Image (cartoon, rainbow, N blue to C red; front, side):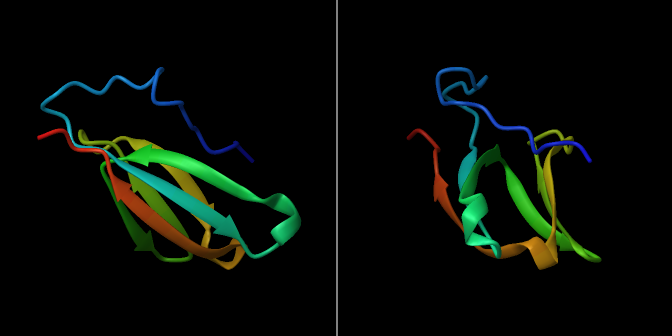
Length: 78
């Protein structure tokens, strides 16, 4: 199983015109903590929580049963 990809804000290729969200994913097993994901969108596909970049590439993928909840923060620059 591949680990979810994540980046810090300093490493992310965000320009002024890009609009990303920072997602915080909390796991059902609380001992796993949480995962930060930078992505343009999220959606449920079958049994998976999928995060995509602006050009539709996979940013992260989680099995829904492993996720307790997630929230997002817009990183868009005005």
